Length: 182
Image (cartoon, rainbow, N blue to C red; front, side):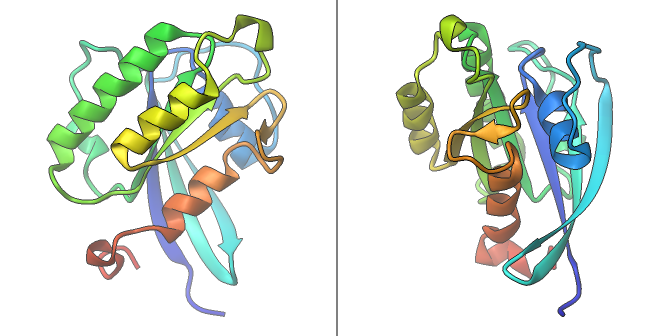
């Protein structure tokens, strides 16, 4: 089997959108129902995709808002980004767009894989952002998209809630970055 490849992925979004819940569900297989604001945590996990092992570092960040200063550390040695909003919050959908703009300002024209994730899709009665709105935003960014529920441990298509995002980022580094991040 080939040597494991390292990938570092930052998870960004407004506060209370479920960034930590998604990350802990992916890494530890459990849902944390209580809200404890994150400063920053890094989780590690080994995964195998198409016979290739990846050593993942998932950087679970503090919730950002439209006035947050985008930390430069979120652009150093990061291979991809998962931008999370809650389908129950217009504010989180607005803020994720600001975060994306700040991210582009920080990383410049370098093509870094980005996946937009609409979380909390199990809260049907509280939904205010449609799946179509999320897809359209991701398409405008040339990013991948999915909806998920950290609580139910499922995206819309039935696999682990964060697996598609992580797998997509791990496998979709642009050719210009592949040598740098092997």
